[in-house]
Picture (cartoon, rainbow, N blue to C red):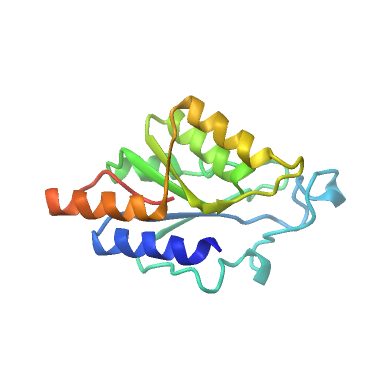
Length: 180
């Protein structure tokens, strides 16, 4: 399960006073991605319903920024950057490196990682904090190959905690790593 590992990384970022961003699907009931609208997916993450809530055991610290995506019925949004102000918010915090975890490896994680690269950020995907849909069996593996080929580093949650701890010892208030 990814949640305990994500919580460990979130705790390290919180202890280091680093910015934390969460992205979430926040779809209207008639979103274009839903099968009833001709899309690929069953209805999911319909805004203001229990299905759109974060996992109940996921620790969302006070002060974390929550960015909603896929909020327009006629606009797909796999990436946390697509149709949101995430890039602006990240740049306002002077973040230069992002750590990504969550769902789904082969869609949202992949597209967010690629858009983060396009925004000029260093990107690390927490390989033990992601899960894919795998409509075609190995989609997640192919997605990870693609992002690595573009310059994304794969790290574990323990690697991320060590990096944050090391940066914290070197710089009392580092401003470069962050979780997304």
